[in-house]
Image 1 (spheres, rainbow, N blue to C red):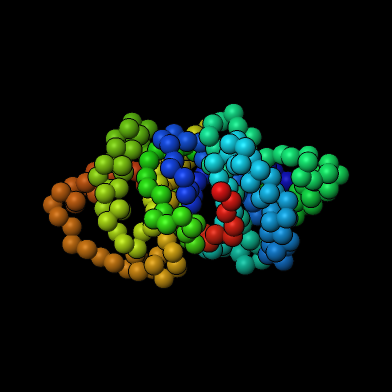
Image 2: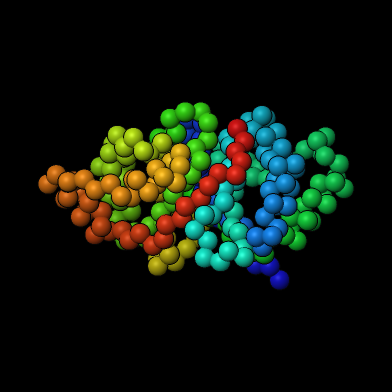
Length: 244
């Protein structure tokens, strides 16, 4: 049987995000040979349901991303990102006037047949800045963090007050955000993630390659954050489609 674990996350928001906004991240994996069919199902059915929910004020936005640094080329992992006005709002979207019950049931059944594994994370948006233009950016780099349980408040303050200003001045970076992982988890598991938005893979490489001389204060700030958090994994994803 397929094990379905639910998760949440965020991305290309062209509306002003409010602090503590729920952001759901849903990872799904399919055979690479089935990836195009899954995208067509999302394009023809589910993205339209999300658009209807957005137009009705029940949802803020929805994105579909493809994981670029996959370990196995035979499988492709996608990430759905749900930007929600509240935890009570519908994550899936529904409209019987748009599709018949039998047609939508068929699409959902086929989606379930394609998906090999699924994982869902619930996060809340803690702060950041949206992409500069209103078009969704093409790439996002997600960094997952495990933070000392006694330092969560200090970590958030350091990210938002000490590091976000430098992110804003970085011309390669089109957006940045901090998210707290709210899905119940053990102390050894990740507590936060940051999202860095870029227009191209080249910009990601250039950003990683750049080395600047740090001031004494910058070195102190960096050492302070290293003392309470560990970066456990980094993912690079490309945008497949976005609905606003």
